[in-house]
Every structure is written in structure tokens, then in C-alpha cells.
Length: 270
Image 1: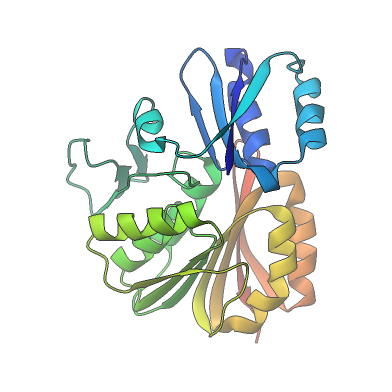
Image 2: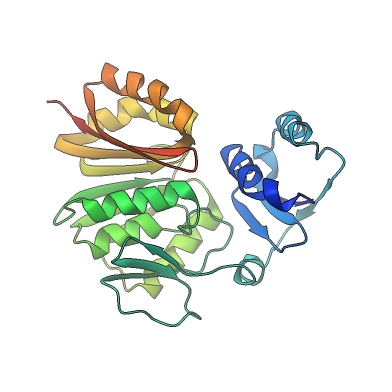
């Protein structure tokens, strides 16, 4: 079951506060101008941690929440969703938006999943994919969310993509978006951090702690001269990620940042 939080937040705090919520497990956020709505699975909620965040921004008396069984996420999301351009060649839009003549067009209808391209981490991951040679690559998208990164990988010529998420909403959302984009080379699995195989490119837009836990597995699964893209964490977490990666002979190629969030591209040194 999901919990719906309604948080009255000053406009000047909304961007940073949404980032805080996403960093602490919230999977869906939208701003209806009057307040923020946030959604999180009940068993994922750290109420003490949330109260600490609310207190830090003097919002401890400015929220309410309730359980939601069957949320019409599409209706909520459509009220605020706008197409987003990534670079000069890619757009992420909904089916009700006017098509644009760009090389890569991704059509999505998010449900209760994270990864529309609006958040800094998804944007940076997609931008990094646009710069990579994906032709005939075997790709793992761990924590696929709405499937944006998997879809872009196929559109850039990936031979096959394995998209994994532990959340039922994310799985059904990804499957729906694959159909909207006529994808044929993406497999979707519901799993909790488990995968098999070797990959040329691994995408992991999750969070700091899970990425740190997964780096040993990613390093083992990465083919020679393979690329590992990590995001879902702040710029001040980069040193911890880099230090862990170096333990497993992963070399940092580049680091990009966007509004205090970071994305790291690594390759194996074997």
C-alpha cells in the first residue's frame, strides 16, 4: 500500500525539498502549485527520518498523509507534466503532447514510478547514454522505474536490454511504455537486486547506499571495457562512490552534476 503525503511548502523550498524526499524513498512527486504531493510505499517509510527533514525546513506542522489503495497517478501527473528535451536530439513526452521531429523520441505514461526525465539524475543518465556508443551493446537497467533509460538504450541501438525493478508499479509502467515505444529488445523482470549475466553497459539510477552495495556485483558482471553509469546521489557522495569503485578496479571516466545531484561514468580496468 502507498501513502499519499500532502505537504504545504513555500515555492522557494519546493525544488530542494522534492530532492530530499526522492533521496529518502519517495517514488512519485507532483506540485499542484498549492502544495506538494508525495507517494511512498508504507513499508519503505522512515517516519522519524521524514520528521527530521520536515523539521529542518520548518514544515513539521505543514503536512498530512493518508493511505491510497488505487491511485490514479496518471491524472495527478498529467496536471503538471511537460515534455523535456535532453540535449539537441532527445525528447521525453506523453502521448497527449505534440510530436517533435527529433532523433530520439520517448513516449511515457508514468504510474507510481520514478524516472520521467525531469529529475536531475534521470536527465543526467539519459544525457550520458546519448554520448555513449550503444550499438549492439548488452545492457542492464537496474531500478528501471518508468523504463526511460532502457527505452533510450534500445533506440540507440542496444542489442538487448534487461530492465529490473522490485516494484510492481514500475514493472507494469515499464511494460506499458515499451509498447508505446514499439520496443522489442527489452526484457523486464521483477527482482530485488538480483540478476544474472554479463553486460557491456550497466545503468543504476537508484541511491547512494544501494549503489555502494551493488558495485561489487556490477564490477563482476561488467564485460571488458564495459561502462557503468551510476546516479541517484548527491555530489557530496561522489568520493564514497569513487573509493568503492576503485576497490573493484573500476576507473572513473567522468563526473557530471546538476543542481547538487551527480552522475558517474566508470569503466573496468581489466
